[in-house]
Length: 508
Ligand code: NAD
Image (cartoon, rainbow, N blue to C red):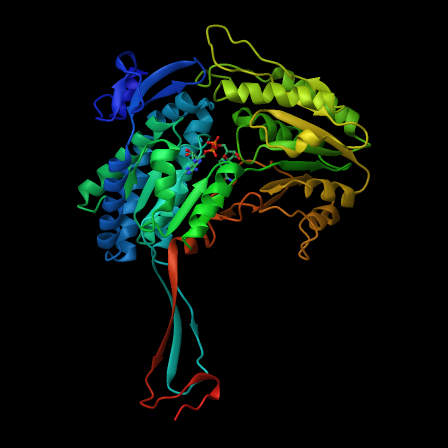
């Protein structure tokens, strides 16, 4: 662990305090290793003054950065991507250590930022607007996209690095600075990430566009969300947080980009490739110990194959190696903290009270030498009438609720019955069923992400990521998600020498 801290420059960082020397108090948070249940280090928190300094810094950096041509901004992002390539291993391991995801998923997060950096470099030469014909002679009309301002970025514990990457890489090529408020459960990842990006800025004499504030929601989070200097707040986290943030930003007529909870389903049709479906469900439901926004939480399986499918899935669940996320062969690490464990146990109990049958798991797992909150991956089969109210809640743990269906419309209705609308998938051998699920009239899946023959989790950066309904409606990452980080201007130029109004209006 010391080597890791040294490689990432955390040992000497002014914000970081040796875990053994931390004085408990309001100004410090402990970064915990959730697998061991032990502190990694203490991190000094920002107070109200620190936030004001950071906000002023982000505004000043924006004013300089927006004047830099977009392709030149892209070159800086290219260097950030290259620097992350160099630090992929230690940073990926730090992520695994701090939030308990397995090593390859930690490395995957850094890879995601490298990928979005590459995407953003290309984008820096493609931030185009369009031209449109004017109805008036001698007039030209065009649309252009301009830098928006400093962007407030709030991130959840479970993607402590990649969500920064999605936001920061795009915002920065768009000419914005960012001010990042990470989760207090992953402050070290945030410091290490920001230092890597800041070094690139220093080397290039660029302004300090990668701002960071670490603090509690009342002292730093909410005051930041209220601040008009941040025209956009991009917030990732629970629906509860999103409702609060949206109302504060709405009150000041700012913009918010919300990436909130999910209650994602996988439909397995009678003619599905069973091997493939099993692997897709296993990764979707058990990966990251069920702590992904896109985790498969509901399985909707055709009644003709349900018994066999669930029996084989339970067998696969029993083989999942639970343990130290950094150890070879481990597929599932711990839950993030005691509260998550309590929520897991409560959900399992409620599910059984509501008539669900625990097919496997449903209890704590013990791992020799580690005090973290480990649980067994769990499948709960819903009663025959598919009534299981607890399945409407997003419990951030590896619990999969299994339902059955007779015809596809019924399965799609069940898929769409969640309050959230993030991710969804169908495994099927039939083009008809796949296309029905994706139907262009909007009567198929109502989610922002809809997959065929693959998992609900594991999005690529090239597509826009996000979801509908209680998931908040935001889109980040690929496609045209960059537009959220810019302001649109419609420009009309009269080169005719005569004054003429639109719609034939005369004003003489
Ligand atoms: P959380 O809502 O507890 O916290 C998320 C972030 O919001 C943290 O940084 C927190 O400090 C901040 N926050 C909370 N209240 C705030 C307030 N009033 N003002 C300002 N900031 C505030 O979520 P979590 O437990 O860290 O993460 C798990 C949740 O995040 C799950 O619901 C998951 O589905 C969701 N999530 C969604 C996506 C997505 O892209 N849709 C991605 C990852 C996680």
